[in-house]
Length: 289
Length: 289
Image (tube, rainbow over all chains, first blue to last red; front, side, top):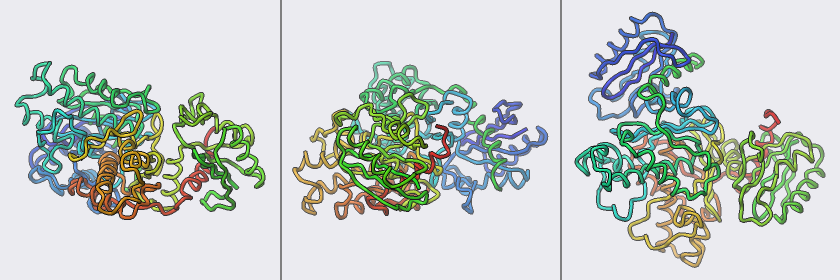
């Protein structure tokens, strides 16, 4: 048996299961202080019987470099108490078994790639559009890691000509994609969630257009075959179709491989992250400690 | 010995050498019709003695999917006669040895990564800014391939507020990055090459700003450690420094790993592509035919 933790800002999802991604038991706890939350998570895992490895898919920013002194730590975060929290070390010390560690979106990308919407040779990206906008990329069968993890919500889409006044809500970049098209950006600007605005409201086209720029840029940069788009904002009826149509229009039949491009919904629903964490647990058994 | 071909639109660079990247002999021929050019390239290689494999880094768009019926072919290109040319098949049939095939920019990326500016754990991108704008990305030690190859010049950078009139020269996208900041775009707009415009000309800041958006987006999407920028336009004095400063300003100290980001010139000069092609030749010996 393997253990999996999807460490989110609001809740921790815990599971034990198999390398295949099959979940044997699942549990959720609210995120409080690191001390309380990590202890409760460890107790639940312990109550499930012996496990061979633990996979953690955590909110970011997080230190993913296994050669760094602070590997497995949360980095600077506005979440009180969590900055520099050594999540991976806590479980490694308590259970003395291998620990796999990655971001929540990389975990979800891995889950969808292996068992969900995206198991294809041409590579895949997983995007979530919710409180923030982030994602993970799989190319050549592996999660893309560089000096850290992708932060795809923070590029600067081109503003629509009719839409240059709103300053955006990102504290670092103003009107980067997250500053324009995340849930809080939509709420700040139009006073409601996207799904609560009338069908003919300009918000639908604007948000779709900005998200389509993310998709077009991903296709152009990484030549991925499939983009899986999840998160609360993507539950808006019609949004995925609008993004797809707008991305095709931006490409204008130029990109080689464009006939195979797909933009789809997650297949694993809320389980992508926890299934990915099981895969991280499994992969950690082959890593040096 | 291994053979290497950098197949460009203007010239073919040919070499024989070693898996290490060391070149034993080198030769250049002008690009004419496929029949003439491929035959002359093959004759030169044959004259150098027996070779164990051939690596080809070709202008794109090209079919890189080894499972496709047209693997190793040039795809639709404005270059007369070259559309659907089966470059890889020509050499495979004539020499009956393994053939590695990739784009010129992926070849250059591989060359710089292994032997030039970019041998680092955190991944690297190689960008060329010349007649077109293109590039290759190396993550987890491998060239990024999806359903095809990256076409990074064709994303849409945000226009500067003072610069929204020029329509751009890309026949597919108008003012995508290539349409705004490639050599022909600069020439069409200002009547001269960037290096021939006065130091205080607005072109320097505008071109640097658009290229910086490419760099920022690459850092945000793929978390690469190093971006190597080559090509004719990048020889403009001061441009690399301007791009670097502008990319830092776009990031605003947000991206994790940002302290390790680098934007540098190629170290292999004009040899990046041919050295990369030698590495492609070497790698092809481990591939199924």
